[in-house]
Length: 200
Image (tube, rainbow, N blue to C red; front, top):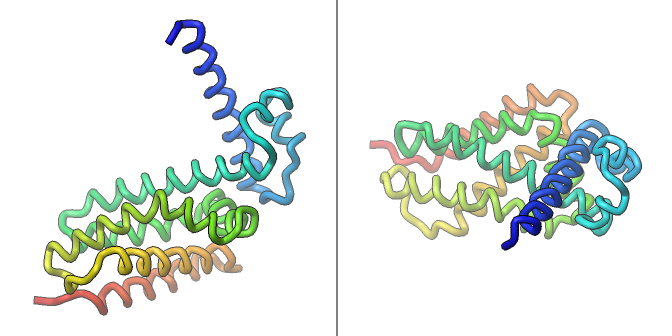
């Protein structure tokens, strides 16, 4: 690839990232319905043509924002989980970190309030599964390998665990008292995990 083409590609990616960052800040504070393309253009400082070069419409831009927030959420959860000293701690630390991060403004509004409504339930689950399911699958396999949970097919169990966590996150995002709801759903998740645990 020529130097000029590389430079053009880099500029294009930089512009795209700038638009996504500006949209993320606005969507997190006011939600998808409360933000106009004009506001995103002003916040990002890019032209309308540049925005529509990268995104077909506001919904397409929102999808990119959601994917970024969801990917970063899973990366942060993974870092916390992998710091655990054993398989059980990796599982419980990961679940706790996920619920803690769901208290964040951007995660609540973008991932669990707007994304299911704007993108539709099927697309929301497909994108979320692309990032989150791999991590959940890993920790589920991890506890089975350690003999802490009875061996069973990993895939359905990983989907059920992810479904429980997403439902807990939806409760947090839609609660009037998010801190109390976080504590209550955290207790419920731990109750379910402990129920599946094999004790020596």
